[in-house]
Length: 198
Image 1 (cartoon, helix red, strand yellow):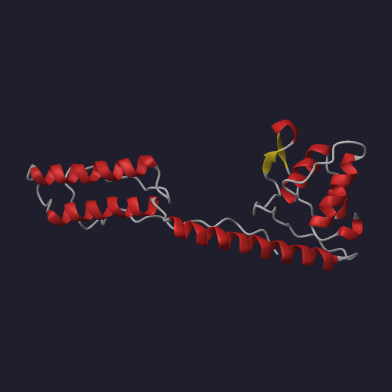
Image 2 (cartoon, one colour):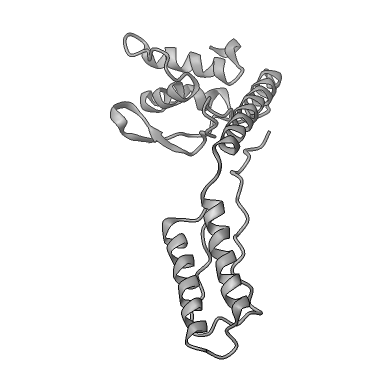
């Protein structure tokens, strides 16, 4: 299974261009979800359009005010995701993570002794670890290398193995004494579906 890129939200539509807004400054393309700056820009735009209408600027109509208000409301609505929707999205994310982990570990198990490459197995929290910077020992940032083969895993540094272990087994006791590196590497093999190599 290939690394799935994060979902990219669609751009938010700006106010329609076929309506006249006078000398009001058209807002920049907002982020999705909108930032505080985007919300302030939408509010400022609505206020400016209203003032243009009050001054009697040419072609600024009640439709102009209505469109500026719709734009502001659209951003406010997008910035306020209801809790019930957040709960549903969290459940969906957990299900997708669990399914992705099962599929990738099954692939890795099936590769066996063949020359095929391992697939990326997401961490328990859904993070796709390859090439990510994560907290290592002493909160130092560690870049995690891809684990495409047995050799890639066996060549992990102590800090990289620490970060992979934490991602795959959050909350579990971290082996730190004796042969900690080999203990962590064995756990990583198990978590990616290749416990036979541990």
